[in-house]
Length: 59
Image 1: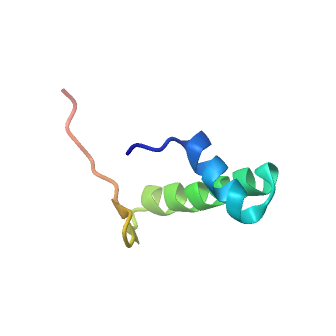
Image 2: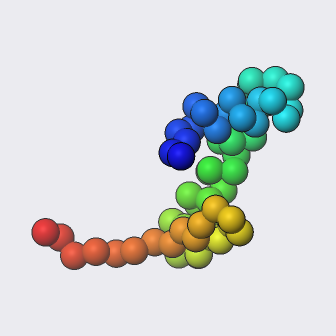
């Protein structure tokens, strides 16, 4: 099953009880992950996946 950001926010809303709180939490996690990957770090979330920057040649 694919899950987009809006669906993730809705799933987190059920746990936190407020849509704005859920949106802020999802944004904070994604922002931290993007910043870490952009800095060259590898981000691993067990059961979810690993994310790392990959430089690819221009086509």
